[in-house]
Length: 93
Image 1 (cartoon, rainbow, N blue to C red):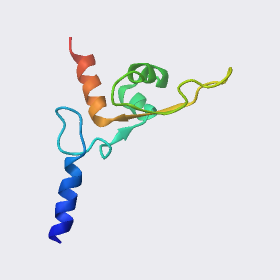
Image 2: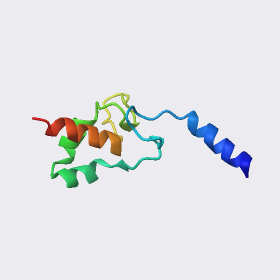
Image 3: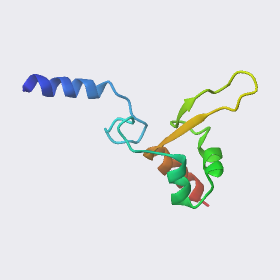
């Protein structure tokens, strides 16, 4: 049992989280969809995509540059820490 705790402790040490975050790895944190944030903030999905698409830490799944004249399909997943950071930045007057 002591070796399992040692392995868990050493594997957690290799994971880097965002500055100022707790010891919880960033991939374990809750990730929000564009629709969830649009509903929470009472915004359109397009407005949420514009706010978060260039934000560091956002997961973007899909083709960045599709071939030919095809529409690009991308899925955004926004970690809770990024959501908090953007909200704080947008509410400062």
